[in-house]
Image (tube, rainbow, N blue to C red):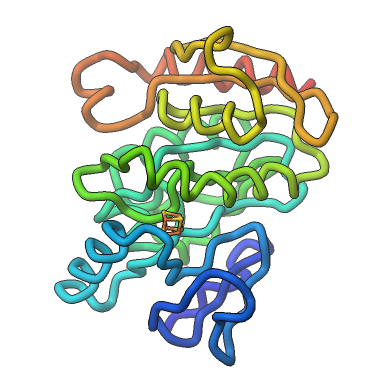
Length: 247
Ligand code: SF4
């Protein structure tokens, strides 16, 4: 098995076996190291996603096929919150946005604004490091047709909440898409009504009592970019705003 641990210095959950086990220290088998705030790779809290994950694993046993951990620095000032792993992207490679269409634009944009070092090669072994940044997802397991249901989004939110709370230098959050935007607001205890999602929206929120800027963008999915709903320029404008907010 590949070593999924410490590829970038961030905290990892490193299973020695893909056998599912319940969430929580008590349910973990020997050799597992659950370091909050990441979900265990074999998290079993969403039955539909576990069934789907196992069906993909049966066809593609060498793929990651688990709850994909966040990628980046534990001292990140910027966090990008995506929707969920893509089946042939992060679910295959084990690194958020790695190996699919959406990752091409996201990692190119991060590079352009100085949030990464190295060359993105669509593989967790490419040596890419994020600088001042982390990428996570609102839902950590791949959903069928890229569509998690509300219960799954709710079930995974504690991991998102814990992830954000565990970043002592967090200043800016960039949410990709409405599900990410809404789940992040809920994770922070912020009412959705006065803070509707829109491309380029900007709100002041707080995490652990510290002020944080929350920016949102259309998701950099193949559908959005192919239809012209999101252009590279529109996406870059959001990251330019993030950079400016970081100071
Ligand atoms: S989506 Fe989140 S809560 Fe659901 S099984 Fe995966 S890690 Fe667990």
